[in-house]
Image (cartoon, helix red, strand yellow):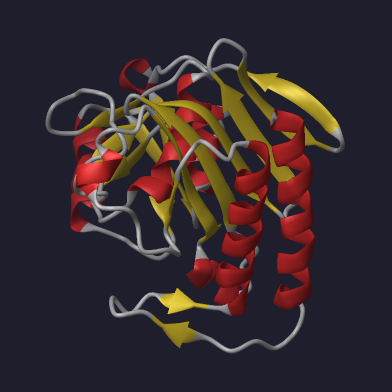
Amino acid sequence: MISQIKQCVEKIGEKLMEIYRQPFDVSYKSDKSPLTIADNLANQMLLEMFSEITPDIPVISEEIINTAFDVRKNWSKCWIIDPLDGTKEFVKHTDEFTINIALVEQGKPIFGLIYAPALQKMYYGEKGNGSFVLEDGVWKRIFCKSTYETQSVVTIATSRSHPSYEVNTFMKRLLRQGKKVNTLEMGSSLKLCLVADGSVDVYPRYGTTMEWDIAAGHAIIEFAGRKVLDIKTNTPLVYNKENLENPYFIAF
């Protein structure tokens, strides 16, 4: 199944890059977030893929009207996808956009894949198997324990499109502890990938995110030996909730 998903995602990536290299129209949703033909095409191709390889597993996607919770609450497994995460980055041509795919069981991610076609970089994580990154045609295992609390130098991932006062406060708190703080600005779910592979130490997120933004990265981070926790409760994020919006979280 995983090999089929990888192949399909690479094909979707090729289609996205064809659009990316040409002029394209941008419309806006009710929340003023951008939408392009690429979002809809990637969503269609992913739904077709799932209907073939896992027809009995339902899908939650950013680009469809999702099933009511009265039905969803009975799902033991579901796919959670963002066909084009970082549409703002796609529109601005920063290359920092991704395809996010997660498989969730009883509210917990058991598989996640993130592909950045413009960067030709793919990450995936699977329960019981670990997390990996594809670089230069070679799959490499990634494993990095969470250590930012004890480090003297801390690199923080920050959002390119969603800066926040709370993140600045988080940084100042680390500075008061005598730590040196570096920041790395990045768009889309790539911030989660950088936590997983150890490129950054921590990603505090105080802005609005949805389950499809985070679930795939959560899987990759967890199976790389790190954590994604609700900032208030200090417990792992859960998925297929009645409200698909995530609480504020910290990945480290």
